[in-house]
Length: 273
Ligand SMILES: [Zn+2]
Image 1 (cartoon, rainbow, N blue to C red):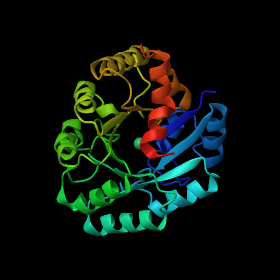
Image 2: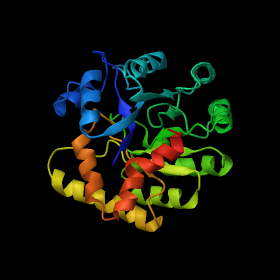
Image 3: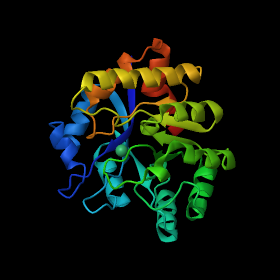
């Protein structure tokens, strides 16, 4: 039976969640009940829960992410968001140690925080991630707000880190959109670099043409990398809906076995699910 893993989900159930406007745009209630119901409907067996940004820019505290995962009865598993200060790095590692069996990775919000991926402030985080074999997800490419910093979220800013940290699994969120070719090269070049396809769909004029363009870019990245071993499915709920992101996978001009890798096999292996 086809199962699916969604490696990029947000949720808070808070009114000050900055993603509420995306939920409204997509006609979503953006609640735990709705999310779990939709996951079951689409046979999504697991979701990796990442902190959403709150109004004002700070991420939802990680302990609340862990609490929501506990309420999900095992369907959601936590990824710890790490901000670029020594204090936050220390707290993130401590939280991961205290919840060792639950935590499946870390996330760094490149483009939203004033730090590059290679900033020494993250050294202790990367040491821990490497030693525990926990992947580190990086926001890459376009930012959800016009105040984002593209010079720090560009996917090529991860090349140096991937060279230095060959044992650390690096996941580039959003396929570096719109720098698909750069990400194709990174996943081809580095055995430890992966990319997710979360949060790429947007509505508006030319939505259909844009969806075609996305599918073409991702398909071509797969041809360039000679396979889909490095590509991971994610919705970025509530930024995109489950049906839209699944439709994107369906559109890819690759064989069914590669789609299966994207939909769950790669995530299962990389996150040890
Ligand atoms: Zn996201």
